[in-house]
Length: 260
Image (cartoon, rainbow, N blue to C red; front, side):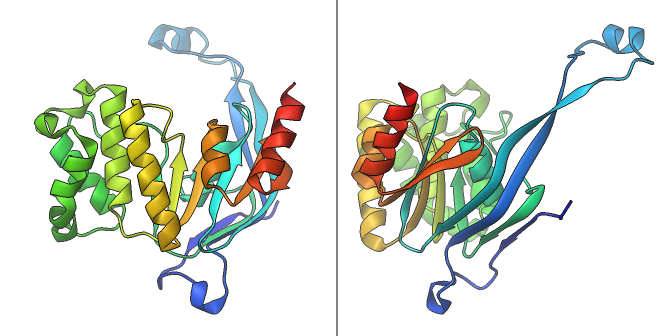
């Protein structure tokens, strides 16, 4: 089986050389799922010499995809279609089992709610931790800290441990950190799924600003209205395969027809 690869360009973006922001060629990702779930020490001891059987789940199969600089690229599909796995491969969280994923430029990922947050640290500490993980220096985080807090609207809770935050507070703080990283490529997974209407409108304003700036965004969502409003290109995933690609209206129509 060919080994997978996932590389991130070290010298800024590749737009000046004609390289795409993201390119995937033949990307396949399979997970091993245990058929028996053992959760206690007693269960493990009783079944000490019984082998755990696994089944294979192919989350992605032979994905070919190209995201150009300046694209607002939507990824849609039912739950379990492979959307989040695709973003995690782009973010180098997962390595593909086959094929390659090449990302040319600094990436700002906002994937799962609270991903990268340490529940035992305060909001302030997590802002610095996540900013540094995303490639900022401590000085750079300090320079945008007040803007992050203002956007997130959780200022009075910044000295509280994030394990005590609501899901909406986590979403606002995580998104606020992501948009303040000077990255060429943003990876967004269901960023509008949690949060009130006012927060969603703030996100829409950010999306509009980024589109005008020519930023590259890969956007996973179930919100088809947002896809139609913002995305110039869309792919439809089904069972880990690309079943349709093209403009937003065309792919959304295909999705709705197949979902009936």
